[in-house]
Length: 296
Image (cartoon, rainbow, N blue to C red; front, side, top):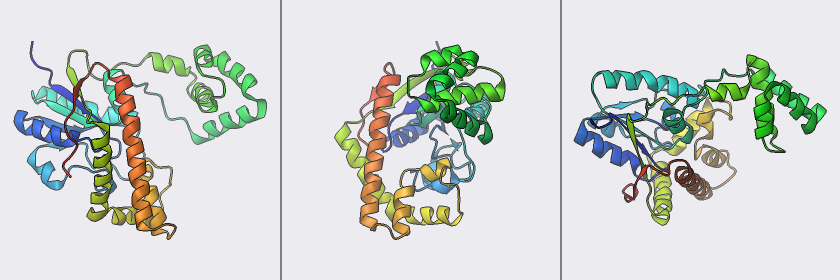
């Protein structure tokens, strides 16, 4: 049986997965394809630790720096963008290395992601207003009338998921549970293999701290300053990237650079911890590679 043409290399931030992908691609002739939600953005080369210009010249990279910070990409949009890339590579017989740590992106590849139309803001706001007006019990009854499975599944007190179920049914005329049931994995069974880069936690955290220091030296403050100058919506994905909020506080005079760096380090370690937990729960059967994190 031929080897799968697609390899997924996942892992927490600063774990060394990009270096592993680069070395593997040089050895096999594979194309590296981005599966990281922040490395999509052209405005976040430093803050997202995107592959360097030199690394991108060593082997072919796809879907890195292709989005503007003002543009909100979702997992669904990424999955629609990556499909033709993988189809083109497969037609040419070229192996692909999909590299990243964004859980929803990996889920769309291996388990599927419901392609639910975007719900307009006014519908989402109406759902929240109705919930507040009638209370959870009555609102849950209204959700049950449209989506019994969602009403039964969503836990007591989960306002966000209840209003989401109501809003999707209101906007699309179809139950959220029906949308979800139609999901299909982007990758066919047997067409891919998965690997998780999982270094020891202490060395991973040390790598997170060292990465933040390198980012500041490489111009992270300038990136944040440029983002702030554009007056972008703070709820945009790019504005929620690790380090943006913390370094923006320093640029606004609210904290020292040292405090902003330490806050960014803490946020990065927390994020890496959440990623480790996700991979252990969601990809237990993937191969583990306990390599040392990226070189300091």
